[in-house]
Image (tube, rainbow, N blue to C red):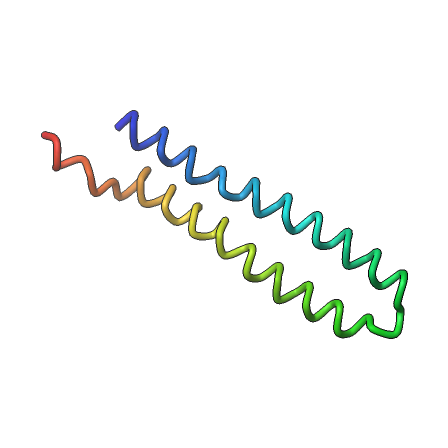
Length: 79
């Protein structure tokens, strides 16, 4: 059970990289809109698609953490 809790904690750390990446992308998009206001629509749509793709990584990590904590398919293997 302790190893499952440790693995769940490591799986939930996937949100850290996703959050950092999305913050950097949002900053770069704001800078790009400041330099070229005419391309605002294209920049924002690209930013939103990229943020959605990056967010899936943290959602998968959260799902794995929930499975390891509450469902825990490995309990019966070693008993």
